[in-house]
Image 1 (tube, rainbow, N blue to C red):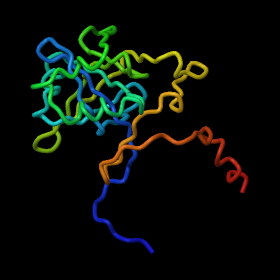
Image 2 (image 1 turned 60 degrees about the horizontal axis):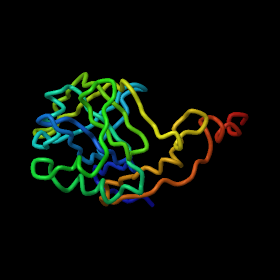
Image 3 (image 1 turned 135 degrees about the horizontal axis):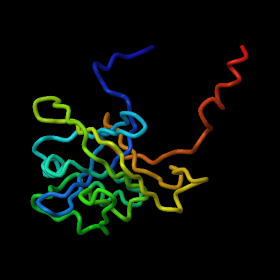
Length: 186
């Protein structure tokens, strides 16, 4: 028997990321769980207009999306509960810049995406969705298998919004088309 839950969004888990931007000339990071894929080269992040990082993205028109490993859970959660207005969160990390020069990234994160802001979608009274074009992706060599990011090696932090909890990634079961191909012959 199905139980009605109301309009509950159950598209979880999602990777928790650290979005980086220069704010007042200094790197800052915020934890974000509301990110998404727009297309292969485009991603989105939803950020409240009152957030410190918001102004840096609008000013520089660049941002980074850093995928922390589960080993970075404490630092990632911390970046979500304190504001860069009062705390230098960048001091927690070794920062680096890529091609754009204004999107700070975190060396300790296994995967980093450097993005150019291409569009802002006004959403809700107090949030906007930033859509970025990925201009470069950086990965720790140890997290690659055959030149592709291996998320079993990355061990990203997964977020489930229905109960505001963190989760770990499970195991890989197969590639697209390999698991359901036996049903194709029916």
